[in-house]
Image (tube, rainbow, N blue to C red; front, side):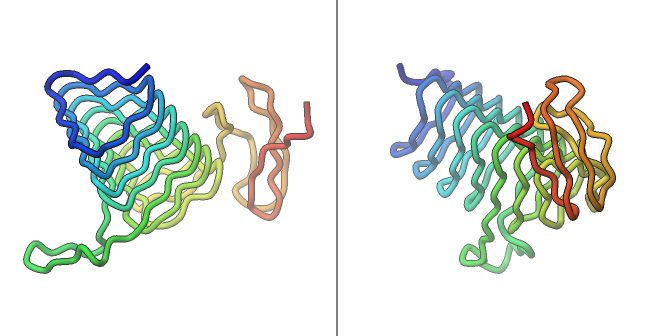
Length: 195
């Protein structure tokens, strides 16, 4: 089956790209990159050598994914959002041995123009609002906004706001899909038993 790439894209020898993926205008994929199936890479995207991208991810225009960033299945990266890989970079000081790993878990959304400071974990189905600057780990299903990003609520796997407190215990149902969620001791999980 293979993948589709625009003629202006630069794909270095050794890069792995899964079946059904689409590579748009002016994309550069470095030789060590590992990209899953059915991934969309928008115009002007850069993918570094030590990057892993899971199946069904959508990387919008002008996103650079630098070394030591990993995206699990179904991650959405909004236009012009930013990853870093060195905590305190300097042009005059070599710091490639100081790269910090960043992991974005399954189904998370990273809004347009947000920044993810390196060394963090973004939880599954978390939602980072547009323009947010994330400086600490984000829990599963958390909705975070602002500079620095702070949690203001919870979202379902469908991306819908859930009527739950930030802390404590509670239960909620996705208003679109009807799936159930349980909040216990400040941790939200999908109730797989509720059907």
